[in-house]
Image 1: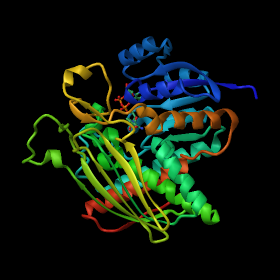
Image 2: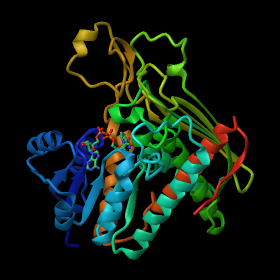
Image 3: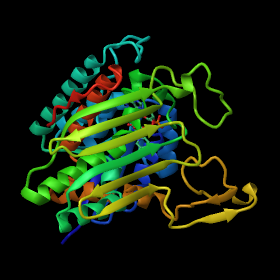
Image 4: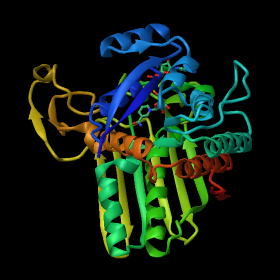
Length: 393
Ligand SMILES: NC(=O)c1ccc[n+]([C@@H]2O[C@H](COP(=O)([O-])OP(=O)(O)OC[C@H]3O[C@@H](n4cnc5c(N)ncnc54)[C@H](O)[C@@H]3O)[C@@H](O)[C@H]2O)c1
């Protein structure tokens, strides 16, 4: 079969835009032509473009017009308008996590701690509906860039569930960091919440995905979340937190620790931790306790390689693993961190869909259930953990 060419526009020129570009180099089912980049930080966009030999655009609309797909690599507050602008032009939108959310009432001094969380739930679901509506009317589609769905360990678990007819009884997972890269992340008005959405969306969406897989394998019906109980905390903003310089602690009005306890419609459960208070490199894993097997899916770190280095300085030019504080002593260097994380597999799957059609594993519908669960969890956390029903899509 003749390979098709897909023309691409990158929106945003920061951390996510960088790993998206790297993954595009590994797409093999289509030829990828990166037309250009657009970001509101024009200086950053110019540097990004120069380093990659592409054009920096000064208008979003002009770039959308030239391409088949845009990669929405901006802070979450801009995901909906950019994705909808692309869909309205019948273009595909690869949208980074979280798909959308609630970013306040527009006031400069909006405080994420003091507003009623039912507002966040109502507004984020309304945003979700607008995006789904735009997708329905478009020839393009939303491709939700939740890399955990495509991570090799999660896909291996999908195979085990499908082929053995497993019943998942309990999923237990975590995404933990020592802080976010993005400066804007400190404010609810840009990020739509704290660590419960920013990091918790990853293991949560993987859990929702695997329960869907289980149900579809059994009788064609995905198993959906029914309710959630949650707690959030702001540990680094406690008056008695003692900053020793290892953990980011300049958050304005967001949580840095969260726990979601999800009950599915079949009565089984998932417990999802997310935090920004963990040292030693990021800690991303999902454990599946099923009726016929148990799996621990290590996304990062994993033990593909373990190295002892007596002198930190010796490894100054060596990337070891994300957010490790030191390279001295024992570490788990990832021979291909992007591969374990699922970035290239995700991009390959999306480009196959864009060029040749076919189903999307990480769809807008899965993203919608994740958004609904997370904002229901914020409502629960406001009530110190009361059970809240989850609306599903
Ligand atoms: N999947 C993952 O592992 C992962 C990792 C990090 C970030 N992310 C997600 O990627 C997204 C971007 O995060 P980041 O860390 O790259 O942020 P960043 O701050 O590094 O970069 C954001 C970029 O978006 C641009 N921008 C901001 N508002 C814009 C707008 N309205 N229009 C056009 N450009 C705009 C900025 O100029 C900047 O270039 C977020 O949704 C984040 O949650 C995902």
